[in-house]
Amino acid sequence: MTTRKNDTTADDTTTGTAAKPILVLGSTGKTGSRVAAQLRQRGHVVRGASRKGPVAFDWTDENTWERTLEGVGAAYLVDSQLPGAAESMRSFGKLAVARGVERLVLLSARDWVVPDGEEKLPCERAVRESGAQWTILKPSWFFQNFSEDPFITGQVQGGELVMSAGDGVEPFIDAEDIAAVAVAALTEEGHGGQAYELSGPRLLSLDSVVGEIARATGRAVTYRPLPADEFAAYAVAQHVPQEFAGLLNLLYGWIAEGRFATLADGVQRVLGREPRDFADYVRTAAASGVWGGGGGVERP
Image 1: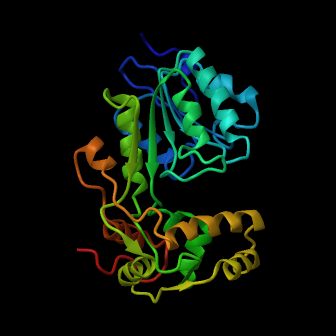
Image 2 (image 1 turned 180 degrees about the vertical axis):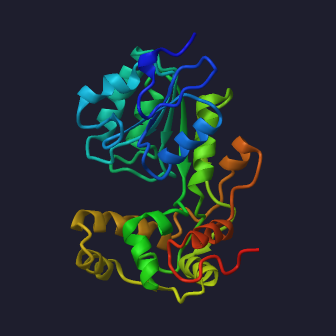
């Protein structure tokens, strides 16, 4: 089957191989942009969709859903993070299957207890029950939060990382590794019905994080832990919305309590190699100049 002309948009990549487009939601985000790039590198037809991209997609506007799904064979999903996210995911999943989509790969998170006491996030349940061949990705915190999240990156640039994460540790992971696992699940056999927990190769405290950034940049960068109430006040003073400051306190609190202070083997199981180390990421990011300073002081 050849790809029809109307399968190719301003954000599609055509190839000489006959294949259905692969839909990537959130294609301008930390993982979506990397999933799209890696798929294109492998010669796949990619339909990148986002609220501001050439292919418009909005979780709150179902009129945008139909066009994104036309002719698609597989889809990478990132939920809306809105209160009705699970309901939207359920409706979208059913529509996708009705339109012939065979595989759905959902970016989720490592398990947490939701209000009704279930260990699985509602969006995961919606994808599992969609009728498609599903794969769930459950990563830890991204390396790229320190270089691509405006709020956190700005702190690092200013020389002081402020969080309510105490002295907890987290197995931070490279978004490139998450994307590589997603690409495998979207394009290869053997990943249907799998929920992969994904982490980096070691546990890191925030003191260790800023220490590695400081060494790589040649700049002084420190970590200042705050109690949750003080962090909320600090974040709001930095123009972070109150609701988002509360979410950050929740996430940072999980680091403080060591909720996910264990290594996972999903990257190894899917890719047959170890996940990228934080030090490698830091050297690359420092060399880009994102944090200022000398940039890549420790580069070989």
